[in-house]
Length: 262
Image: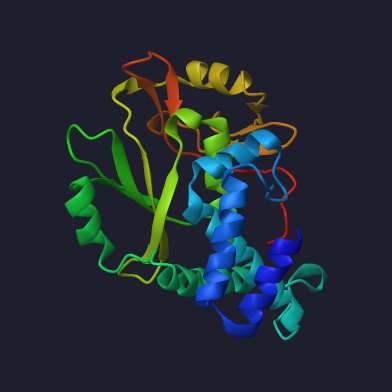
């Protein structure tokens, strides 16, 4: 994509200038409104990218540049096959996304107080996310940290979740760091009224309709298709929606079976 190469060249030459930010915004809008494609996704997966909002697309563009620049630098300790190690890629992508999001007005300082003010108190906290909700609102807000090998794979997981589970699509609104210095993706997601937790049989049927089968390695919570791996599908992540009566996935681990290198 010529526009992507032009953006990479502009970042390399001058960082995130006003002109470069506008170039990223222009390509982001072209992708959102179907004028351009983002390489690596099928058309239905591409819809999941667009559901994630402009900050998700912009961050994906920036993360791609971080990976390419690290490889082009040639001075990093290599992982297998001469490629940079995942921790190096992750570190470079985190740092550049922070610089870009601050320049683009997408960085949340003191994010906890801002989110509490706009979305209500924190109602849950797990290994991956802090969840905020105000009674009566249609959405929750989350500060989501990465459990993936690189930041781009964490962004990609949001795309794939939105593709598989559009009823609980995640919409990225910004980025922050927590008190431990971990990069967190700030997002919103529809609030689901939980009638009860789904059973394994109900989860099996739901994912089978999407082309997945049990991979026999996850005690019934991990599934696989020809293209994607779907993990952590335990009942605490899959509710029976009070309104529809159907199993609804609010969170999971999703990635490509044959992972990309970034």
